[in-house]
Each structure stands twice: as structure tokens, then as C-alpha cells.
Image (cartoon, rainbow, N blue to C red; front, side):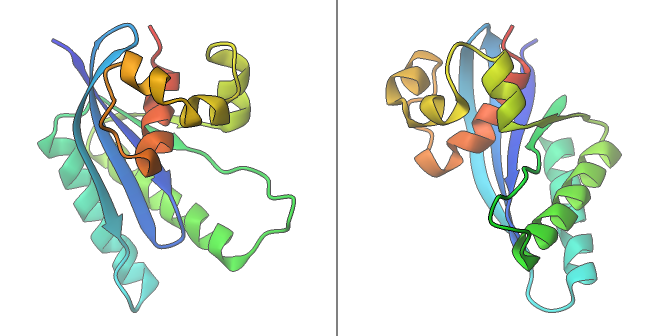
Length: 155
């Protein structure tokens, strides 16, 4: 049975999610793409809501793996948005774990060294690459989330 993978990128107030089926090496099917927005108001209560939404999503889709784009060092300094994104990333990790998924964290630096022959950003811009792996209809804004999963499970 093909594996279900979820790729995730996290911003300060939103979680971008791509659900893929891995059919074979470098052959994927796009099952779903969505964005979960953090509710306005009290952040801890909003984190609880996102935790429930994301863990339900993982369970409902029977995803075996959740691959999350990890934090990166900001040369421009750390802003409040970076800290909020880091907090929300932790919530997503906890939600995936509570749903029974295996979690992998993808950093661009590591993926650029260990996946293929190009830098991550080159893959993200290359529409032919996305077509060749079965994902021509994936929104460009969701490619990074999908790449998180693809780079962690290339074989």
C-alpha cells in the first residue's frame, strides 16, 4: 500500500499542508492541499484549536509521515513573527505525534546537501521537476511544503 505523506510549512499565523501519496520513487499523487489559519485572540487557545485540527487531519487521512520545514537562522535578526512561527511549529509537531505519525524535520541546508544535485530553491522554481514527479497541479505557494515530504522520502 502506498505511503501517505504530509508536508508542512509554518508561518506565524498559518500552517500550509500538502497531502501526498507516494506511489514509487519520485512518483507522487497530490491528494489535498490546505491552509489552517490560527484563530484571532488568545494564542494558547488558538494553538489548542490548531492542535486538534491538525491531529484530526493526520488521523483522517491515515498519514504515516509528517515532514515539517524546520527553522532557519535569520540573517536579518529574529522578529516576533519568527518566534510565533517556532511556537506554532512545535504545536504542529505535537499534534502529528499525538496522531501517531512519524515526524521528520527538513531544513533547506540539509536538503540542498542530501537531495539531488541542486539547491532547494532551484527545485521549487522548476515546473518541469514538479511535472515529472506527478505534481503538475500543485500550487506554487505549496511547493515548499510538498518538498519537505519529497526530500525526506526520495526512495
